[in-house]
Image 1 (cartoon, helix red, strand yellow):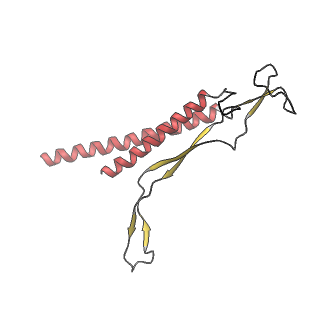
Image 2 (spheres, rainbow, N blue to C red):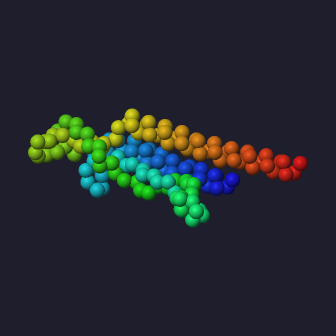
Image 3 (tube, rainbow, N blue to C red):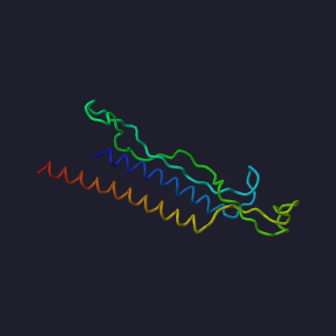
Amino acid sequence: MFEAINIATTGLTAQRLKMDVISNNIANATTTRTTEGGAYKRERVILQPINTRTRWKSPLYPEGMRTGEGAGVRVIKVEPDERTPLRLVYDPEHPDAIKTGTKKGYVEYPNVNPVTEMVDMIAASRAYQANVQVIEGFKGMFQQALQIGRG
């Protein structure tokens, strides 16, 4: 029973980080200058299932060895979104406007789409709520088991 709570906890942690990264993306949606240089680049959270257990079956079974159930999810990394191009807006008076070349007068804005970020935020929030419900459900079952044990 505690294993399910541990799995749900990994989901809570991962989704909370995802919501923090999305909030950071929205906050920097108009940042044209960063300490690394250039416009802010949207960040993405990369998740991976945790599968640390392996079960050994009898040598008589054809598959021999198979992996066990998952043990939750973990964040592998938070990486900048290099696939989505930066937005170009013509504003020659802007201090970060490109000074030379074919893009002269254009300003590079972050590749943050507020609609996409809000959809991702809603999905992460729903996943967070689902994990909370799992924990609450197991907590209720545990309390009922204690009541049965007392009776």
